[in-house]
Length: 569
Figure 1 (cartoon, helix red, strand yellow):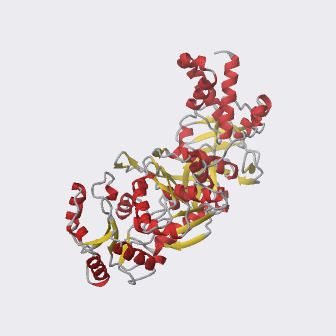
Figure 2 (cartoon, one colour; figure 1 turned 30 degrees about the horizontal axis):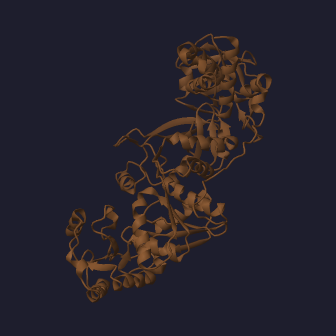
Figure 3 (cartoon, rainbow, N blue to C red; figure 1 turned 180 degrees about the horizontal axis):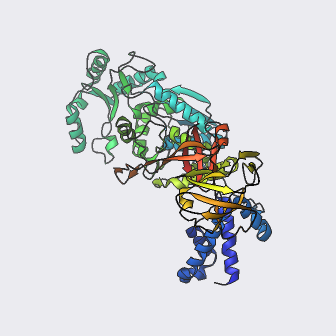
């Protein structure tokens, strides 16, 4: 490989490492080289070894050393990039008028909010901002069997954490009397009927596209049965069905349920009502009467568009535009309450804030920032193609957010002892960030250190190592424990550079490392790793929830005085 190409590879490696916490990877640099110099695609084997050597060398440098080399040899890297003009954000909304757009987010309070909710609420709230319109938060609380005030509160907390602001807040159950009025209107117009068939028969008839005898009943009978639903009929004895089209290819239109009896106590209304509207009935009426112009939701509701418009046509009510987007899920992370709840009940995950989960509580606890979630979601656009994203796609956005604010600290795992003689100082000051002015921390030292077990494997008697922020040490004894003589400033290239913790002031914490929760359909029993590690006493001065970059390890969030959670590399 010629020297010019080696120089270009080193430049790319330094830039990528500098922008990503001091570390880069062979495959990233190989991809960049092949992208800019396609003539090397036939020579991958020839250049791979050189790339690995250069990357390893760059990764051994501290962030300060990387910056210094960039300033000396590649200053153009540090020049701010010119901003490219172009449309930023979501595509235009069909039929939208400035100042007249009304959107909404309608979560059901039957579980804790997750990344899928984040996508839905961010899209709807951003469109309202984009057009200077109005954004409504409406709790879709018409199934008291599964809804709880706990979930209602958790949704609001999650939205506030995301930075979502709404112009109006209401609950669907506020309008129960309106739903009843509309039901009677549909019954009297012959567009709905009360069905007393058994559930199995209803399902069978819908599959076979056959109308049941109840659909032949007259208006008077339907009104009498409606009254019986209020007090006499038991849950499952009777439902109100929309008179759709039993022959329709769209199964949603085969006389769907509009109302059903639920005898559970509602979390705000108690036992005031026992007949509750279905999602289709409530969303159709609510969107129309509340002035929603653009109803946006995930694409599993797309088949229900026809039904919602049919209900509104039957009632001569205004119809909003309905738009759809793909669901958002992460590989190996269950989004469904059906999957998450058993994991909690069986003790496989601790709670809804377990850092392996995609709930907003879990992402917050893991150290994912709300602004990173928003940028990630906005980057996906408004496609209807299924989005099953790798978690590192979100990590990339989060890294850019937390890097500038993360205190750098030393931390060692699988600690081994190193005794250094001839230390001329009893303390050292180290910057809390390699670039930004975040102050310095003073560390007391007496020659007794902990170093990482992984680094210890590479240390041999007679070699030199560099203790980051301190200086070079010549190793005089290697084994289960290590000894060395302090040399101070010396050679910095081609020697092992390692982090350390002073034994005198070391603070022991538990490091929680979340991993993928499911591999295929199987629960990953090794999805949570716990390490006992040592870090600096400065850790105790940080506030709970602060982000840290443990040097040569990764970004973490302080969970408590004695525990940190690994966020990502």
